[in-house]
Amino acid sequence: MHKTSGDPNRPAPILIDERIAELNDWRGETLARLRALMHEAIPDVVETWKWGVPVWEHNGIICTGESYKAAVKLTFPKGATVADPKQLFNASLEGNARRAIDFKQDATLDEAGLKALFQAAAALNKPKGK
Image 1 (spheres, rainbow, N blue to C red):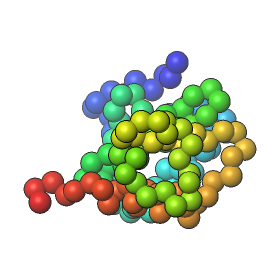
Image 2 (tube, helix red, strand yellow; image 1 turned 90 degrees about the horizontal axis):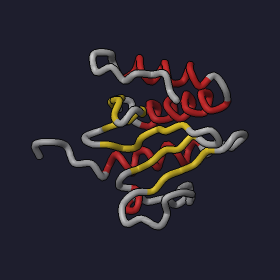
Image 3 (cartoon, rainbow, N blue to C red; image 1 turned 180 degrees about the vertical axis):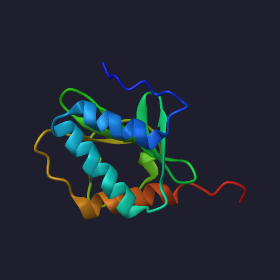
C-alpha cells in the first residue's frame, strides 16, 4: 500500500517526489530515472497525479508510472499507435489501444529509445483548441 495520499491541494511534482522516496529501493531509483528521461525528452512536460499514480502529459496523457513489487510500469494509453522501432513495449501487447513497458530490477534502460518513445507518444496528442 502506498502512503502517498494524492491530496489534490498538493502539487503533483511533490506527490511524485514522495512516491519515489517511499519506494526507497531500486523501484524508486528506476522511477526517478524514467522521470528525468521524460523531462529531457519533453522539457515542457506536465506532471499530474491521477488514479494514485504519476502521470506525464503534453496536450494529453503520454504515460502513467506505476510501481509494483517486481516492476515499475510505464503505461501508454495510445501505445498501440506509437512507433516503437526499438521494441521497448513488453506488456499489455494484446490490447487495441494501450501498451506498457515493465522494468524489472537490474533492467538496462535504453535511454535514447525511451526518449524517442516519449516524444512519439506526445506527438499523438493534439494541442487543445486546434
